[in-house]
Length: 138
Image (cartoon, rainbow, N blue to C red; front, top):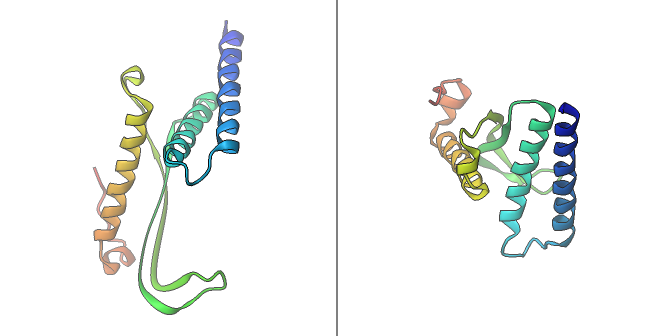
């Protein structure tokens, strides 16, 4: 029975990844659904991978704050800032009743969480960030 379940999960994953490859090869970045598809593909792929590996499901959430541009560009042509803070967080989450939550609702909740964390970081002063005076969010 265990082999059947694993095989069935692999078949579903294979179909999912084939559909992902099809969407990626055909969608254009100026398509009105581009953001929805890419967001859904990223979140769903991560969930499938974690479930298949027996790992906790996580959401990768890079956020940053930069201030005081130096007035010159780096070797890639990007503005150099006197203050830069980059946060790369993997946030574990679970959905208690997955049959009651649509993919769109899941995506919106994760993106809203990221936006709120970005707003929190933006609200901190350089002194608070540099001094490590960051309060635990609950």
